[in-house]
Length: 214
Image (cartoon, rainbow, N blue to C red; front, side, top):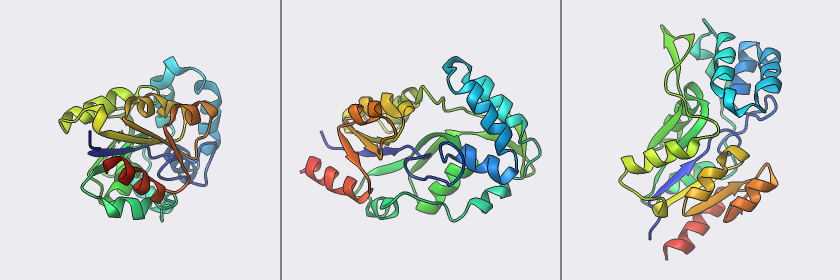
């Protein structure tokens, strides 16, 4: 069955910021807000506790109350992964976009820059351009596969028509769900073992898809 959609993780896969433990949009935004040390302390407490992810998020958002979303501009130009722009520009009739637990104020901006078809990420509520400290829709770090299935349903596609690219343990469920599960510079052995393909440059993904589609 032909691949129709390519779903990209954002943090660490499509983009890697030079901030914090994971180089994520959370780390990067916390840094430009001047609260990274407090954020990192929360990380050490909550990251091992998968059942407390939402509580962890709420504690982080408290640090950002009143912060301007324009601080995202300080992160530009976004450090996209090698070959990503070339890959998304090639399109080849595919639906391409982000599915991320990262921050929508960063992920959506990147999707606009790259002219992607969709962008799904954790939403931060704002009023008059300032963060309220509350969430909108959340993309759970460890349950991204549920959002992945909803996305496929919206396009009237099956997992057999999908490719997913991720880099870390929270991407494994999506990597296994997709027909073509790809690891970009996998961060753990588990990710490496779960993936059908491993890439270090997104232009390699074009070659993989061409082989499968023919």
